[in-house]
Length: 304
Image: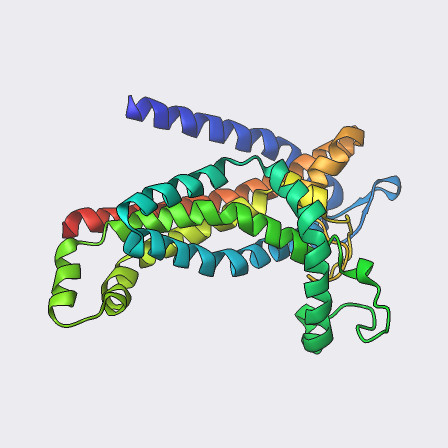
């Protein structure tokens, strides 16, 4: 039964890949490899490129991971090591519930509630750290009336919303691996005089390194492919820039969602080709993450 299920999954995944590849190959023949590096999407001029969109995709995902990684690790450690059994069960259920919340809810939360506050944070970061390219915005932050709209609908705000979606997944994976730390090693560390935190630092964290890496990579896969939450927040742009705080960005999934309904046959193939690129990237990342997590669990079984 397990083999049949695995074979079915492989067949479905392979079918999706073949379907997308059937559009990718003609698109590359039409636009050349510049399709992957170009920053212009002008169907009326028959010039299409997803280079800037790929940059925006990785920018949003990077911001999401920067925020989600420490919160996921700390949350997983607290649930696995500090929370009482009753509180642990409650927090585990809450984390699972967060993972089940539809992405459109996170998108609406980001648009209506997060954006007014995050734009102020973005302005502060630009004002004090604008000398660093990542925090630069093409406006004067010291004006008496700063143009706050320049800090809205940005990769920064979209990244925060996506981080809230990544945290439950990453936290759940890390928690499960932390919980599998061999009791004998825990007890040995405590018997040698380690504090609880010392035991976590010397035993749990090294043992759970694979879970931390795997959970983070799974979160990256989720962040790269997130569609509706990002689509609701960002202001679509095809500028090849890495300015997370500035209005305007785009991602592969948001591009497909925004252009799909009005695309011509050639544009549709180009959108599916962009989807193929995203499919390959997320497939590689998720496969590598699953291998890392499985190795950690196998190690737990061997040590036990």
